[in-house]
Length: 331
Image (tube, rainbow, N blue to C red; front, top):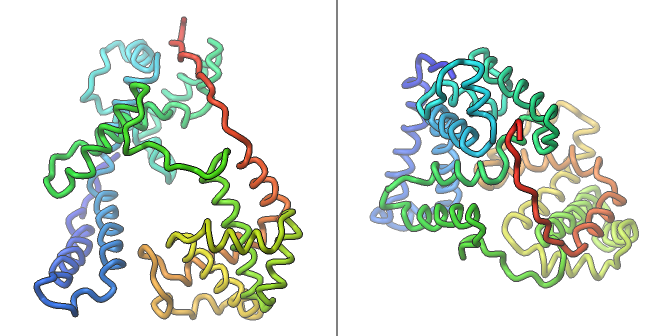
């Protein structure tokens, strides 16, 4: 990626806000500095990642390209065949290769890496390597874990308590062992617990959306329950037992808000532009208004049949599958 001029001016305001938060949340200043401190902390992390995006994506891309070359057979061979020179860890090509995975389109300086990947995939197809069909196949889980190990390799004292176990966890997984930090939490039933929770949430989002539209909670529960082959009592149980976490609760509150806004927005499409996001609660640096507008777009498109099928599939017991060893191009 080409280094952009004016980077100091662009990151200055971000740093100023982070310093402001640092000073204004000081416990030594008393109880007044604890107001909305959780969301301030979350917004500080949000801004930190914006700063990372400005200053560190080049480094992330170099590391990503390095890990891809290490773990994808034939990348080094093809590079050396095309360039007549050895691919070393400091090669600019690796930054361009890693940059291909940064969403937002291929930059002109990365077009050579894009052509290289196209050639690589063509050769993989010619040699019957079905696991390499598109760009994202180059950054498979082993590569991602190695990359995350690299990204978590700092030695800052304040972050060591979580960085060290995370790094160990990535290494363990790549060696075929599960570190305690990545052990699954006990699940009550067979199947894919996280997927099942997501589909249950989708069902309850539809319920709360209809409540926001003006239906009673009882009528909304009956409508959705009938559409997904469950009882209203079961859906009620999901809300009280399975969706108690903060993220799910916020999503349900915003689903209700989405329903409340729907008719108003239908009558006046320009209304959204006049609403002030700061008049609504904030969750993880995003206004409930923005979350609700997104849900107003998504929920009506999601059919009850799709939710029913998602729940059914998520309840199917998982079976372990042994993946074949990845062959090198030419084997």
